[in-house]
Image (cartoon, rainbow, N blue to C red):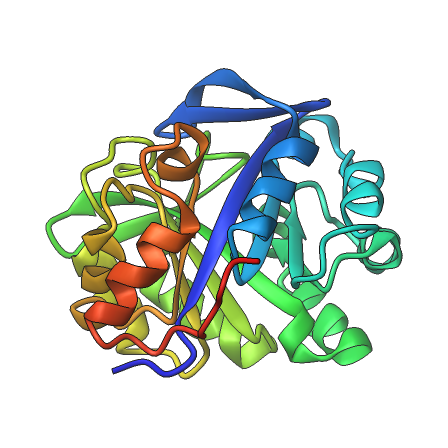
Length: 257
């Protein structure tokens, strides 16, 4: 069973707003990223994941100010992705207060960027974000631009290559399950975790607290990224942590003040 299993709040951002979609589409405004991030921090979340979901379209990441503001009163690791295309983009986000950068579209276009970021900041800072869509029962294709563009790349092969290039962690989002509340895509998780040696974050589909247990126990995930379940207050981070603890997952102890 995974030790140090992490509970991560995922915040998808469009402009100044926290949004949520289904299959990464039909984006609906939820509210203020700052208010939600602070709530999840106070509930004891292990990490925050910010994704600028339109950055690839516009060619730049707009999250620096949101991250800078969050870093003033939130003291858990923050990963930021969307529109990071260069070392300079990574520097800006890290200077704003992020601990890690997640790269998808630019890594597919230029895999050398994975190595460049890992060499400059350490592999623990370089998160390879993979958006996966199922094409046959046991095969998934990598998509970019927030699930819009096909790449022809096989997810498992791309994950293995990304790790060889220097990625220290993989954020694995099932586009098919994202926003559906049906649980994580366990087959997809198992296919990737069986082939890579770095931590894998399961993203897309968490509907109930027990889904994080399935991601760990059956899928081999090292962490879960949660959005809908938290945004709509269907469970708190504390509820999910208690459930994970009861299932003997290696989550950290956290007592709310």
